[in-house]
Image 1: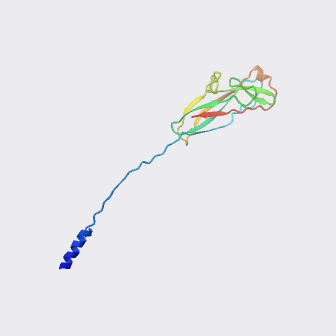
Image 2: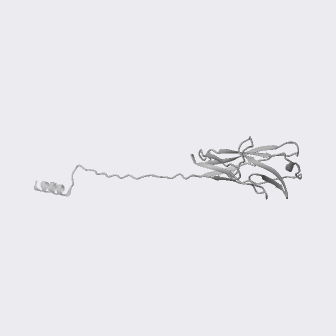
Image 3: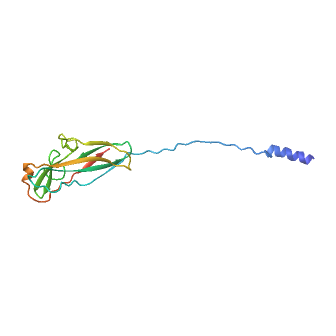
Amino acid sequence: MRNSISALLIASVLGVSGVASAATTSTSFSVTATVLKTCSATSANLAFGSYTPGAGALTGSTAVNVKCTNGTTFTVALNAGTTTGGTIAQRLMANGSNTLQYNLYTTSSYTTIFGDGTGGSSPQNGTGTGLGSAVAVNVYGQLPDNATNQNAVPGIYSDTITATVTY
């Protein structure tokens, strides 16, 4: 019996018992991410078609399609084009050294020149709706049937416009 009491006493001192007791502790941590503003743009060509001098002005349209992160505000500006002598106020298409006048506008009423904010022109603003959906910024073109264009040499004329999206 003395051995049994001694065994119980030793077990008690060493912390051995038939009932196990569990302890826990915890911590917490943050999970973060930053969504950056981003935009991309695409566009299609604007083709006026065939111009017959004296038969009236030609019009056409295209769009600069802008995809930006949701809620991102942006501005689309158009340059003067690549034809020598062209300006935002009077854009030119070229066929060699020959030119044909045209311009780009913000609406189909052809009253406000679509540009970069210089020379009375106006850029266009928008707000992104997410990268899965493009916001179409319309561009309206007009080739006037004026005296200068009525004296144009027959041929194929072209120009290249750069649309810059700032966000």
